[in-house]
Image (cartoon, rainbow, N blue to C red):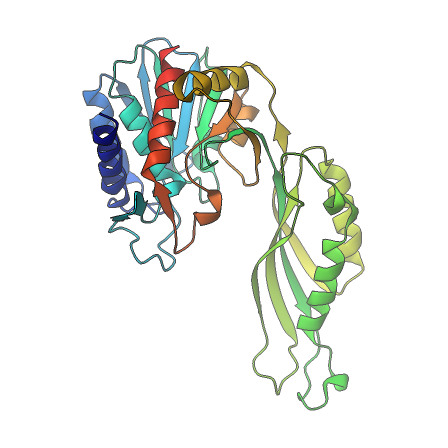
Length: 351
């Protein structure tokens, strides 16, 4: 029986991956899910706000919300982006782990009779998060589980971040006489090394690895024979739970002021930790489904849980697969893990 169920989940993952849904192109997958969920007895509606569309599905009188997102990042070189490949018990494709595999496990879990369920499928999670930001929760929904790849660990905390853009201006000269110019790239790397040594980045947390700044984009220079007079960069700076955001911003601003650069803070997300009833409920469902204790973890990236918490919904994070594979050309998910996630979701929705 387990093998039949796993085959069913694998097929669902493949069907979902084959529907391209990069951010801004969620319409087709919304139609697919609406048809599936309506057939399972859910009342479905499309919530539109801020130029995006969410799919909301409801049955009975639930108090718990289960949420994930519809969109993926672009193919970005994935060889099986929208033409999934299955091999060795895994499915490869864009969104396999983030988050179409999670959706497949949820759909399989719902194939048994569920009396009360409230489901949210958000758009624009990989963009600006407008889907969950614009979501209006109904009265009575106070707890949520957000499906993201945690490796079947129970996410009880989420790191925050400060995303910045930096522009450095130097002075050009011939590459053979670098002392006559000011190399914008060298100025940036001096700034970058100082940035990594800021006090708030030396903080530790038992649920997270040591924080590391992500230099995601750097552009500057023309040729080794010309000293670069300008460069620009985009960086993501992690904030572990316990770090005071205002103090981190003060440290950053002091660093900015000590270098000849222009800077812009694109976004600030605050870290959080959850210790409420929802953690107990998910842990109990995990024990009943898998007969083992869930390992707890911190989630190092932004999720829709941040928006939900601002609306008074206390959240846990749970999902199959490893976050490290998301957004990469190697994105894949284990069908065995999705099956286990589906079992946990069945237990969670049955109680």
